Length: 517
Image 1 (cartoon, rainbow, N blue to C red):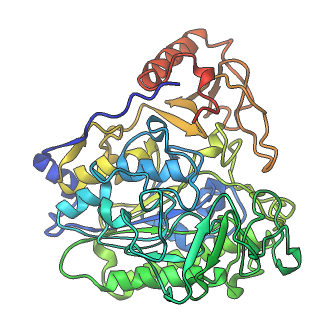
Image 2 (image 1 turned 90 degrees about the horizontal axis):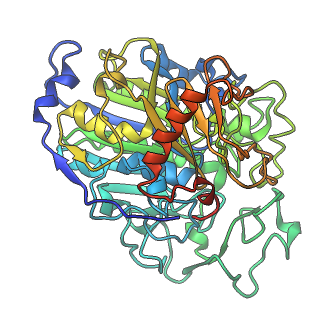
C-alpha cells in the first residue's frame, strides 16, 4: 500500500454564496447557531422515525417532523475515529494511514495547521465548543495527564472543549476540559499505559470478583466503577467519571454552553456516548425497553436530545438554530461486554433493512440516520439524496457564506442539506478498517478482500468477498443478490472510477489494502 500525503489545503473566497443560505424564505440578518449531534454506534433502525426498528425515539423524531430526514446518508467509515476525522476535516479518512481506531493515549490525529470545520466557523465569527465523545487523540504521543495536554481540540478550532479522550470503554476514564483533566488532585496523579499494568493494580483477569459487568472480549484490563476497560490506569480517583452520570454531565454542559452566548453565533459539537459500550444508562432509564441496556441507552440518548431541544425552545433560541443529528457509524450488538444485547434483540433491527453493521463493508456499516432541522428554513421532508458527512464542512461553509476549503474531498451541497432542490453526491468511497467500497447512485461496488466473512468477536458480517460484487440498494437493500455477472458494463465502469479514485493513495492491487493500515 502506498500513502502519497495530502496537498496543503487552502480556502477559496465564497462571499457570493451568501444568498444560498438565506434565500429560502425572508432574508435573515444573523447567522444561525449550529448544533451538530453525533451519536455513537447508533444504527438507522435505532431511530424510530425511519420506521425500521422498535425503540421509540420521540425527541429525535421531532427533528424530522419539521426537518429533512435523509434516507441515503452516510458516515465515511464503519468505525468511530476515521468517521469523526472526516467530519471535521472534509478529508477521506483512508487517505491518512493514521486514521484508524485510536487507543486512549493516542496523539491528536488532526494536524493543527490544516483547515477544519470549527476553524472555518471561528473565522466566520462563531464561538465554538466540543462536548462529549472525542476519539481523535490528544497531545503529542507522550501525554502527561497531570499537566496541560497540548495539542488538543482547542488547537483545531474549538474555543471550549470538555471531552472523553477516546471511548467510554477505554482508559483514562476522566473528562478533559480545555486540555486539562477535570477534577484531578495533585496528591493523586493519574498514569495511563496501554502496554503494561501498574504493579498491584487490579484487572479483570486478576480480580474478576470486582466486576459488576463481565467482559466478553478485549476488555480485561483496569477496572473502573466495577467495569473492566481497555488499557491500564492508576490514580486520579477524584477525576474518574461515574458511567451512569455521563449523560447528565454532558447534557448539562451543552445547555450551559448554549446559555453562554456572547453575541456571536455558536457552533456546538455534541458527541453522545450512547449506545457505545459499556452501556450503563442512568437508573431512571434502566428497564425502559425490553432490549436490555443497549435499548435503554438509546432511550437515554433520545432524552438528551429532547433536553437540549426544550432548552433551546425555552430560551427562544430554537428559531435560529440549525440542528444536525447523525451517527458516527452503524450499529453493533456484542462489542466487548456480556450485556446480552445480542440475545435480547428480539424483533428490533438496529441496521434496519441493511446488511452488516459497525466494522462492515456492507451498507449497514456506514448507512446512518441523518436529520437536519432549522425552524422556518426546513419543512417536513424525506430526501432520497445521496449525502455524506464528508460534505458537512464545505456545505456549512457555503451555507453561511464563508470561504469554502480547496483541496478537501468534501463537496458543497447546502441547498440539499436544507431539503431544497440542488445537486447532491453522485458517488462516494466508504471505508471499514482499511477496506474500501464505493456507492454510485443506487449501486454499490464491493471489491474482493482477503479475510474472514464474519468478525469472530462481534458476529458482524465484514463484507470480505473473493470477487468483485455489485448490488442495487433499491431493489435489494440487504445486498443478497450479486448482479456483477448480469451488469458487466456497469461493473467495469464502477471499477474504473473506484480504482482511479483510490489509486491516488493506494496501489492498484486493491486486495493488498486489507490489513495494511
